Length: 293
Length: 294
Image (tube, rainbow over the protein chains, first blue to last red):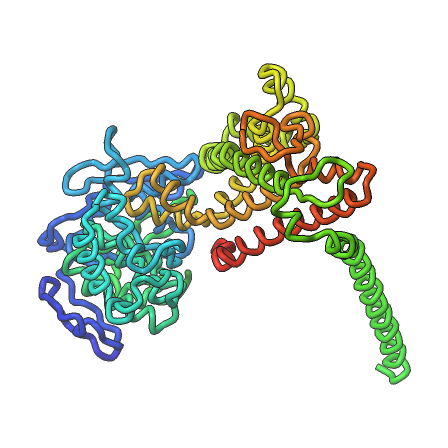
């Protein structure tokens, strides 16, 4: 870490400005001032189960708007389970159960009568492996969410497809091949296509579940740059195994660890700069310095 | 370690190596023989069909209706049309039911109701086709008082349903979970996910299944013998008896005239040819998409 750039969190960052090959640690505000950014998701005491097995135990976190929040921790600590609770994807697992409250803009998404599909339109998700729809072209993939929402107007769909592909930094590479199948793209392009597909429905939050773990380093960097740019419009929560990645892209970092009960617990959640330079917990320090995990 | 000891070890590994090589040859040989047993009959059938069927092939066979028995010449135009009508009707009746069943089983069938339907489908697939013919005879022909193309098509559809339903279920289940998740994560409700994502992804495989079912029913004679009966004359009336290739092959092959035998061989050749052409064209049309991405 030779070149530690300093950056104010609210300072608008040009796209290329975020493209820095050096490890840059954003100078996030001290933890006692984190409240200055509005809260996008407020999770209180969230526990989740697969059948009788508890996967995460009583995790509370406030996710800040227009920021990148990274969840790090060793395998099996419940990072993915936790963010899957944010868009109600957890309930697709057999016998899955969630307890606690998750407020999005103050509204409880687990309240009776809430349509999970509606929740997922507001909180998009990008998965570990790129998963474009194999029967659809590039343009159709990006438009898929709009069609699910019932958007019919061709011109509106065309505009949104172009805007989303541009926002996902894919437009220049595919603008002449919009009718080609989405799965014909390379892995990194497919993942950016999936990001375009997710932001096409204008969600408030984009959850990313290890979005780079199936990609090579160059494609990974592209996605990371993208995340920094997207954070200006969206709230991003990313699960990653890669601590350097968390340090590079995130404003806030949460460290999760499996407790003696076999379920994931939140160990520390603070601005990224603080957690990587001055961890409060011994376990956090051991993990980020590579003593385990 | 002495050189003597080393030579002993070498001799032993040498023996072991030779034994493995021999075993490798024996097993490879056994498999080639097994493959031969599987393939040789197929080629024999094709060869025989070519040898016996080609001489009887002529334009007349496709365009003329049968002459009165005993008078050589004529064709099997009526049987070709009849088979086309009945197979087409059977597909119209059977395919929607079968695909619906397959979709139900894959998407909503992970429970006792699904297990029950799956069991019924297994049993249906095992019923001899002549029994299905008999069932339709009792249900439709006896009640109507006459044989009909519709009754034949119904019998064929009943044979078709379990084949296509099982393949549809399997193809739907092959669609990777990640695609369903991608759809749900975009805010699609379950029914849209099934109809707009899972089903189109599985469609090439399902079409292959339909072709498999088509090949099966196009060659069925037994269930047609007492449902559509067969017809000496050209008819397109679905409420009347109608001719079909398999029943005409049966009549001609067991009949007394040499030109009948020749035409029976030619019809068998045509039947296999049609099935081959249909499967090959479907495979080239959908070939690139038949394999479901994992």
